[in-house]
Length: 97
Image 1 (cartoon, one colour):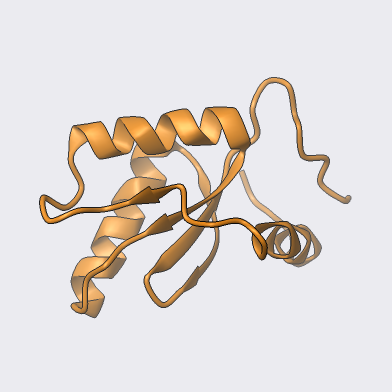
Image 2 (cartoon, rainbow, N blue to C red):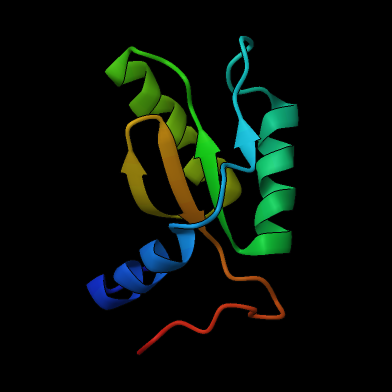
């Protein structure tokens, strides 16, 4: 799924007020964490995930793995926070055209 710039701006605005739903711990990206992110995306469609690592390469690899494993779309990554979007079957969030 590809998002236009207009759709990304819309989602960034919606994500501004939400808090990170999932935060990676000392064990990094485990199957349980991926399952929790997947569940949160199914329920909320738009979530924030906190990836607390100072290694930029490691952070990029973790974020890419999350996107790939959950089949979601990266809206934005600022610092340690990744904003993800994946429409659910109910389509709670209506994207602009």
